[in-house]
Image (cartoon, rainbow, N blue to C red; front, side, top):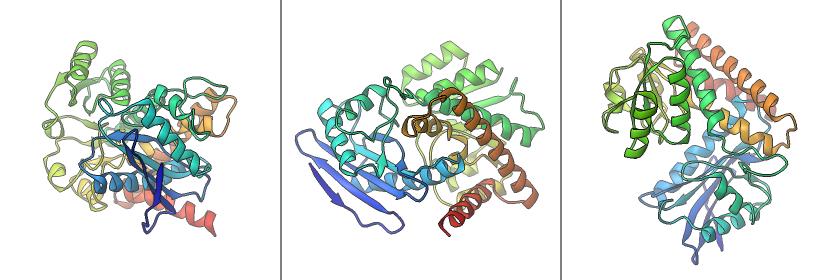
Length: 349
């Protein structure tokens, strides 16, 4: 196992991890441990190269600092990425090697499930490190965080709908869902139960077929989902999908979804605001998953009650953000980041 430090301004610690026998190549990025150990999931994707993987880890780890702070969790922000197609390159040896890399950081970073990972994968990682959450078994096991993530996003959609349309009722509303992984599919089920009409897209044809069968969803191509006419867009796939070109083509009134780092640049929050599109900041909307995982890291006994209370508080935070943004005539993302920045500054003083 080779663990090499990478110097990155603005991050406390970044390491490149490599293990030749298993083919492991990836990065672990610790953005901040100011509020506690850095916590954030592990994702595995066929990145085009190491630069792209590192950039993703850096963006995601910063996002986790803001997400954990917005959810008022005593955790810092971190993230890990592995380069490779999880359907082809993931193996017990690779996961075990990654676990050794996490253990070498001695608790400064806690890993959990993210894109391309499952609770079963976390169990393999857990054979080599103490610092893993999202396990299916154990005294404080929190399991798959996807249902709780989806519930938080659903709450954010209703809150944003109330601010934009005057009612949080979703019956008859058209919601475009981009990405039908674990979170996206759970979200579709909640939206369908609420009476929403769904337009869906995913690169996996089987997932699209399932959504059509279960929810009567209208399928469109992955390329078309960001330009369909709908009331609400729920991005639940990869990040950086909202930028100058895609924002120009949006035909929705609200954007509220589960993908991390939906804005390609800081300026894109202003672009959405200029077009009159209400943006529910992603690091608040998708905080349910880390709340669920935090019960395992923090050894919370009354897990269900604690999660429910934290989700309710997070929804109130979203409501305050949207209210303050409307009063000031600015982007909700600017308000959300300012709130977290002020919180971190006070705690650091």
